[in-house]
Amino acid sequence: MISFEKLFPYVDYFVVNVSSPNTPNLRALQDKEPLMHLLSELKYANGLKSHPKPILLKIAPDLTDEQLDDVIEIITKTKTDGVIATNTTIERAMLSTPKVEVEKLGAGGISGKPLTKRSTEVIRYLHEKSNAAFPIIGVGGIHSADDAIEKLKAGASLIQLYTGFIYEGPGLVKEINEKILKEGLYGNA
Ligand SMILES: Cc1cc2nc3c(=O)[nH]c(=O)nc-3n(C[C@H](O)[C@H](O)[C@H](O)COP(=O)(O)O)c2cc1C
Image (cartoon, rainbow, N blue to C red; front, top):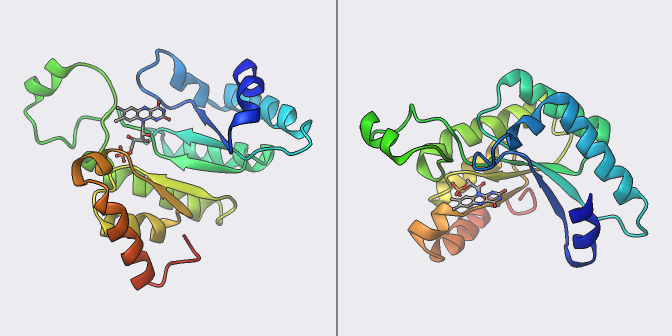
């Protein structure tokens, strides 16, 4: 709440990031009760402002379907403005690097290509199960224009890229924009 009040004059929107694997115990805030409490309090404080700002929730790709159902319920009940799906993953099973090598690298979140499929699955699940009740910002392993289109077709209203921007360079944004126009997705996105 302190951060919310201090940042309020400077931001266009807020993201409640309870999904980083790098902060101990942070992801426990994605459980139903603490999440409901956190978002309700923020929505209440936001509602007291003359010009409230959008508040979005950013989730992990490692949530189960039951946890995603809870997210849908909480977002709908608290009228939170949208979901950012997803953060990095703690899953290692999809990596082709030998297990011993991976273990040497230790804990932490994986971004980029190993995440593409799972983050799209999460977007699709939220979109279909909620009947498109809220906007989803799709993020996770977008390394090509096709990856971006897949996220949009799965139900994302907007997309973000981080790792793809580093590996593929800024030209990727142009490629994505051109493909969105070509596919006639402008307006959906
Ligand atoms: C080095 C690094 C730092 C990140 N820091 C944050 C952060 O502070 N807050 C956050 O919500 N997500 C953070 N993320 C997650 C990304 O915003 C993004 O959700 C994730 O990497 C998946 O997208 P990508 O595959 O395009 O990188 C970070 C990711 C990386 C690789």
